[in-house]
Length: 468
Image (cartoon, rainbow, N blue to C red; front, side):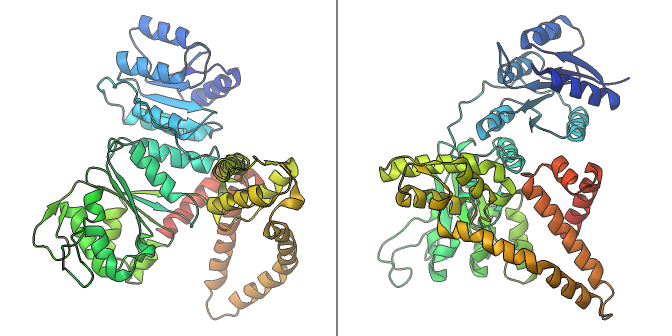
């Protein structure tokens, strides 16, 4: 017998597409345009659907209200929330309200079917959900698919105290995500304490983390609480965890395992209840292989891994980020708010941004101070952005020669696997660039590579398995 799915969306095209996708997958799909009609049908029927998929923004009643009512009266029905107006608060509220999954539009139809199948397999009766908590506003901005994955992770983790490892290049906003994880958790009323391992002299890290007694070492003129005590009941964010000395890693592992430690110079155990969120821009697996990071600590921290995308992987967010940072800079510096022309915005979107979001924020500060008029065109952008195009053109002229030389070297006969490895690396680069160009949208990336979507999915799985 086919499973029954109800689709609630005021957009007829979405209903049409989902109906055909579900029916092709062997499901019995029923469509609703208005929330009131769907709720009336569910109240009248003796057999509610196996799954409900609902939009968020609809006339009369939004999807969060629908989610709340279904959770109250039919808690056994898993609900998948979908929306074209996705942000962090919506994702968090959806998961806290009891949603099984959160899908930002546009979505891959195969992903929708996979989520539906998973919902049926994992379906369990649940207690009535509590009223949705009010969540605070967040400075995290992003509608690109790559950022939606981050939002979904934060939403899921809002119901957990598990340790989290944040990875990504410098400037991608790891501390912002750590704060969002704290703000949307049940520890939100307690302290959020941040500590950057790279900014503290090695000989002081242990004292900084665990505190010390008066006279414990030269210069310890008074007793001091460490960051673990300051964060007791709340969250401790350890940035650049890869720079932590091995001796301190051993102590940190014990705290994570036992929830207690000795301050430096003390024989009195201190018990704490702290959620640790760690972040790094380096490859910790390589650091473990090199003997620079403890493998057991890596696994203890890496309970949940969230990778933050580079700015190049979420180019569609650059205009919104730029407007936000320009407004923020104007308020902080007490200066007129600058506006970018379409051509200037396009140049920002095309930029390399090796410093990621932090570099964009600093660029907007520069524009606020240095641009003469309130409307800023391309010629008033920072010089390094204007010079990027010339560098790109020069690199474009040389790439064929460079590639030819590298290929010739790989075919010298010394190792027959060299060429295969090189071709795999080239394919990996092509996939990365296609995903960057499309903001992480797999279907569009596959089209630009002239592949089928299934081909891209298969190659991504192969590359992921090779990297583990």
